[in-house]
Length: 388
Ligand SMILES: *Cc1c(COP(=O)(O)O)cnc(C)c1O
Image (cartoon, rainbow, N blue to C red; front, side):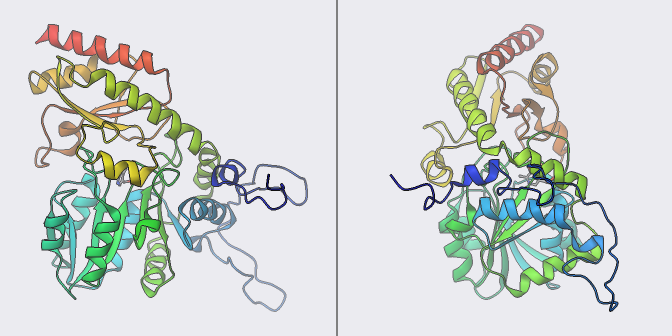
């Protein structure tokens, strides 16, 4: 056996201990919250390093960033006040007229932001079908494309994209690859190790895990000029994560491995139970061997497929909406990655112009008892079908 002295602690150990935090003065095993907006200069009127004003971040936010960097095996991470502000910083740092390649269907807020920049003639967009590498390659322009955006697993049908193959395509064209793997956080998918240049996560979701903050994070493999530009956008837009929220995020991340393991086990049990169910047309979950992205998802997640799935209900659009109304344990709410299970009629939420199946329900599976969740969906489906 390796002696304790030589053994490098696993990531799960490091994250559970918030990177082995101990307060030097008191021995406290929980970090404090540092809320200061400004910092006094020293006796020579020089700025004390590294902080001087809140928009550049502070100790609490930096501690949360260090934890995520370790999770991602990243060089650096930057935390923002929401996933959308992190995504916007990436979009905003691109030069005027830049060409980007993005999925036709993806997280609706990010898509809307790209399309707004396009309408203002600040960006050129080419689209590909999520998970379709041939379409991705065809949409990418050699020496012209600056950014390829991959969401995997992809909202709301959970198509899986091979990150290594997408990185090859992006890099051959001279573009950066950004991955949004919010559905499988870095205890599961470490996108940088598959060749992504920027790993994006809405930390509102699994990383925090308790539905009590919004946060977004970007992580990189190597520091490059684009990273400085993105950090400048965060500073000038004032979108750094707040200290109190950073503290909640640190607290939440300590149980990340445990939560994702349980959510995955629950989701697998639910997917297996409802696959081929007479009231359902489809169960979309990459953890099922019948899912077209299963093999790639297994490789990219180490078998930790996460808790995100969708079901397509038989009947009418109203039948699908009724299922959300009749659930007694699943909350009829948006968002994902919390300890509590959520059900959402995606078409209602993403608006009439968004191409989503009208009978699709998105489920975020939490850490409750799997049999309770199965029972709840069974009774809601039965009641919705009686109604029809
Ligand atoms: C939630 C989410 C976002 C946006 O993040 P916010 O924290 O809500 O701003 C982006 N991408 C995916 C896949 C998400 O689930």
